[in-house]
Amino acid sequence: MDTSTDYVRSIEERAKAIGISQWTLRRMIRAGTGPKVIKLSPRRLGIRDSAWREWIASRETQAA
Image (cartoon, rainbow, N blue to C red; front, side):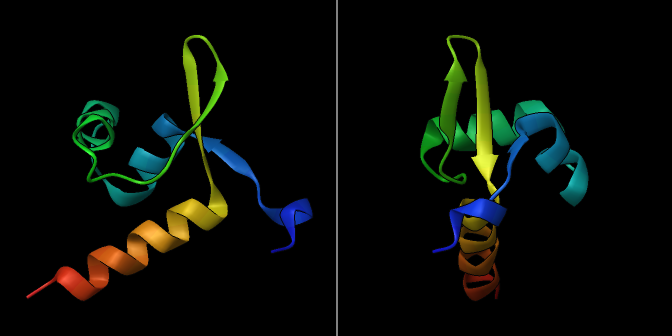
């Protein structure tokens, strides 16, 4: 994996991209059904582009 272009974006930015609230995305992450996150600081989480793409792809295969 080429990590030079694997950007980290905020939960707020990711939630906005798919039209849900950041709190909904945070609940999904806590429940273990959201994308993998990285801890940027004690109070800040981020999501790598690669983890986001994997999560979106996994959601597509679950759709009925």
